[in-house]
Image (cartoon, rainbow, N blue to C red; front, side):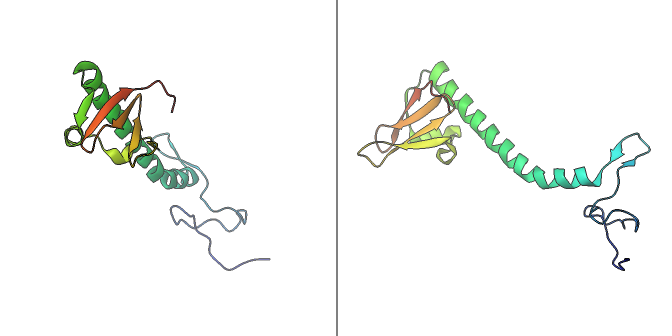
Length: 135
């Protein structure tokens, strides 16, 4: 039974041969002149995964940056208490903590970062504390 529809590759829109299997949706792998192999299926799948990877990579870089800033403040400068505005000026973003834990009986949150957490002392001051908690 022969169908008249023309099937195309999902990635490069090249017409697939009529004698190829009915479930085939991508071109066959091709050997390029430089010795590399062109695979439409791999290129298609990598392109769909790339935005997720870039987002995760950016988030990890932010966490690492926050860790380095807090380490510098805590270990080198021996800062234990700091104003929230000053901490924000250093580049710490309170929305990107690994997780938050509510302080019992108060409307305050402890913000956890890699190896450090920020404990609110007052409305404007925060205490930097080193922790050994595995996150």
